[in-house]
Image (tube, rainbow, N blue to C red):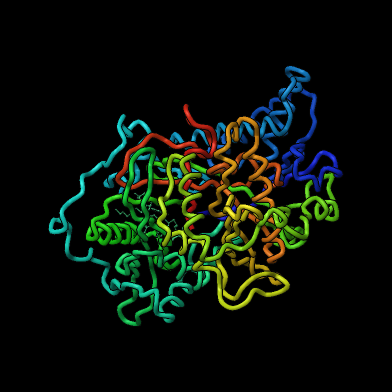
Length: 545
Ligand code: MYA
């Protein structure tokens, strides 16, 4: 997993005529989840009551998204006490409240979505692990927390499991076993807070994600019931070479930790984590990267989900998004309508092919120097990440999708020089819609890696050249996803994403994704929040599947 599914807050243009103008930044944010109008009141009794309501609501911020009621009440209070204050508008107040909440999360003071409110000391398992236990525990210098061990000093036997269960290495090449994994995850993997959506990784996706070049089958760790061999738990690692600031770290990317719903809260997760750690150690790997919606000790960065609505009626039907007050569904459809063909088609945008691998690998490596934590990819890894998941057979004429396609990758080839100037990719990760008769699957596209050589021009950032190019490039990815019948296009506040999300009408979601490093100290990296020396996004250049 890489992410928690999140409902959307809706963006609405101030003027309807701005709706199709992708350059328009005149978007006002309206959060509808938990929204409710507040009663105007004048009597002092009512005021007192309201103040205590405000205090209560503000307390809610510790664990939940900022409710509309809080924003409305803060605005009213400001108005009451100070009259018209420049900048005291809804969007600013919401942004400030969100910021307060996110700062708390990053400093480990608050949990998210009420799901994890433990103090660092209450983490019985995590307290024993080589991870920073607070941001103060990160030291001055980047480096390991525990030294690596020679192979013979690594524990040779698997950790004991409760009786009736046994370890089972899952062979991803075997269609029967990949189906078993698919079935475990489809019924038991990550859900949103309201249990309305659950990730539904396809068998093709899992095969793509778990078999990068140099993968180790021993890092695909399953647990079965001894008597009937039913697969009931799983965790995986795949090799990844990270650059974290100026260090190269050979690590494992840990993902798809899942325990059957009937076996929860029995302390099985720590056993799975220790066993995959042992398997990594046996291959000489002592560092890892992982992401989770829950707050554990201690995120190195946190990013927020953003959602670009494509299929308005369906997203409204399944309550992924809402029709805001003062808005109609027809206006919303117009607002989110996208062009029929990608704008860069004339500039040489086409699907990436095998012959582009070395050019894309070079462009990727140079572009990713912009960020503090990035995967370093060999040409074989580039081939795998962007091409091996492209599906079977011909593309369907209507949707442009191939059978079993999980990743979409495009390049811009300069029409005269034939140089590859840009590339862009996204992947498909549907979610099961629970308790809905009409719609069973939410088709979501997720922004993956991209690069543009505009970044290497003088003043690319200062003069807004890169921002403009990325808007075109990602805007085209959104158009391609729309043609391929995706319902929504998701992205996080990492890499250069914050520069174009709003202009491309992505709305802020209520989900945050925490990034963690195992056995590696480094100062916090800029994600949804800037750090002292880096703006938002620039710390994180890793997209986890
Ligand atoms: S994140 C996706 C996680 N999966 C899901 O959310 C799917 C649905 N949920 C479940 O299947 C279960 O609830 C899970 C927990 C399996 C999550 N990451 O067995 P328990 C700690 C790490 O009684 P259960 C992903 O895949 C929790 O704080 N730890 O709990 C990345 C507590 O410890 P402590 C977690 O609910 C995974 C302990 O587990 C997580 O039955 C990265 C309770 O265990 C979590 N997401 O099962 C794993 N959730 O008392 C770390 C709970 O200390 C990798 N816990 O608070 C580390 C690097 C390893 C490799 C190193 C190589 C060198």
